[in-house]
Length: 43
Length: 365
Image (cartoon, rainbow over all chains, first blue to last red; front, side):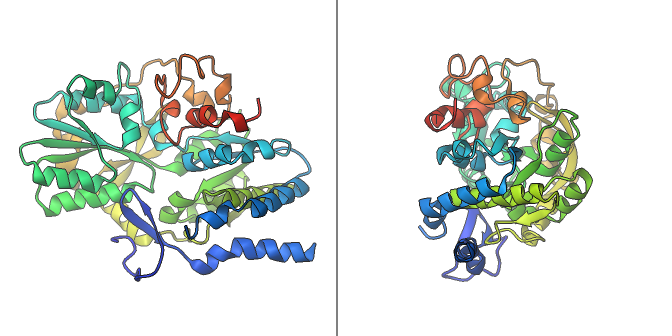
C-alpha cells in the first residue's frame, strides 16, 4: 500500500508485482459505457 | 469480477467496432506498446475484426522480450558463484541467453527460483542469511516501484545478502527511438494504461508535439482497447494529434506521485541495452550510487558486467518495430515455439509471437 496511502476499505486497487499502484475511480470506470449509451441515443 | 467482466461485454465491444469502422475513411497503422494489450487484441479477435480499417503493430511492450540477452547471460554467471540463488519472474526463466535459459541452468542443479514480487525475494534473503540472493529485475515503470520498495526494505533490514540486477526500462524513450527511424510506419499509439498509471502522461504531450502522432492512454480489456482505437482513429481523421486518456479509472495526468518518488529515490535514468534495439538513450533505470550495496552490477565486479549481445536468429527487432508480423518469421511455429523458443517474444505470456501462435485461429492469415 506504499503507493496508495489514502486507500480505504471497500475500494478497488490495481496490484502490479505485489504493489498497489492505483485506486479505481468508479465514476471514471462507468464513463466508457455512459458514452456508448449517449451516442446510441444520438444516433 | 467487478471492473473486469463489464469491459468484456460483447455488445459494447461490437458497438465500438462499428463506430471505428464508421470513423475510418482509410486504413490506419497503430502501435500498442504493452504486451498485455497485444494479447487482448489477439485473444478477443479485435485485430482481425478491425483488419479492414486498422493495422495493429505490436511494439516493444513486453518487458521480458526487451530484456537483453546480456542480462540473462550475466545473471547466469552470477548463478555459478558459491551460495548464490537467482530469483526472477517466471517468464524470465524461459528466455534464452546466448547459450541457454535460466531453466536449463536450473535443470543442471543451478539455484534459480520464481517469485511473484521482488518483496518475496527480500523475505527469502532475510530467512536465509547464508545464501546470497540476486533478483533479476525486469519491467517498465509499472514494476520499478516494486523493485524500489524491495531495495528500501533490504536497506531497512540491513541485509547484506540481497542485490538487484536491474534491467528496468522506460517506455517513452523507446517510442521516440521508433519514431526517429525514417522507415517507421506508425501513425498513432495506444499507450499502456498501467505504465501511465505510474508515470502520468504529461511527458506524452511533448512527444505528440514533437512527432505529431496521437497517443491514447488505454486499458487492457476489449472495450477499453476499442474505445482507445476509436479515439486514435478520430484524432487521425481530424489531423488533430493529442494525448487522450481512455483509462481514467486508473491513470491520471500527474500519475502516481508516491510511486514516482519511490523510483526516483532508488533509480536514476541511464542509457541501456534493449533486446533487438541496441542501446536506447535514457531507456533504462539503473540503481543510484547510494544503494550500490544492493546493486549486483556493483557487488560482483567482472562477473556482473553486461556483455554485448551477439547475433541471434530471432527476428524480434523486426517484429517489435513492426517491420514484420510474427508469422512472417521463417522460424515461427517450427524451430521456434513456446517449448523451444529462439527468442523472448515466443516465451513470454506478453510476447507478440506467443500471442500469434496461441490465438492464431483468430488472426487473419
